[in-house]
Image (tube, rainbow, N blue to C red; front, side):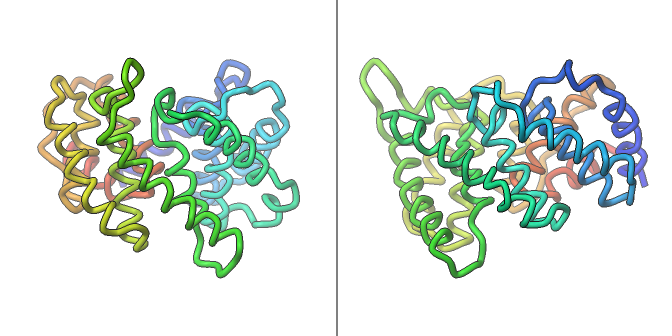
Length: 273
């Protein structure tokens, strides 16, 4: 399969990278590398990739220098990745709960996030919403109830972001493309999980309105918006040179993983090939 061939090429390239040269983050960093290697080791039963994964995760968990706590660049991305691998049963629950790493990261993030009157403005994505969607489970527990309540509060925050301005500070028109489709993903997940369904449904047209006002939209963002809006279909993709194609597929692959939408990647790759 072409997907397997492409994956092997990426693995051979990434497995030889110098770790010191990489930033911390989930996107284009050590967290993303560890996540790819973990999934590769599981799918292809590759022991070398598994050992590399464990080495990198240990370095990340013990890194005391990183100050960013966002999803893309900071510690919340590490917590998300650990939860993701746990949901996939690639790492067991004990490795997360024994150190308390996920809860500790979230508590630290939570204190900073909700201390700010406009916490999302300096973030590239709706980090807290994406993380809590991953953290929510089907367990009947106090912690899960707390996460559910937070998600309800975040739907209200989506309403503020999409419909309200703060003089001299913020307007909804300033929301970036990644922020818009991360809000779209978050609200759709809330609808699917029956969390503030009516309000979440009423806010999706606001995202479409903001999107319609934008010009010169990069093709990977167009594909993501189209996919989320059109029930997993992807639009026509124009011809690109090899370098553009690789970058495009990389972006689609990342958001396909982040939004837990594997068909986004598969359908896009099928359209290109």
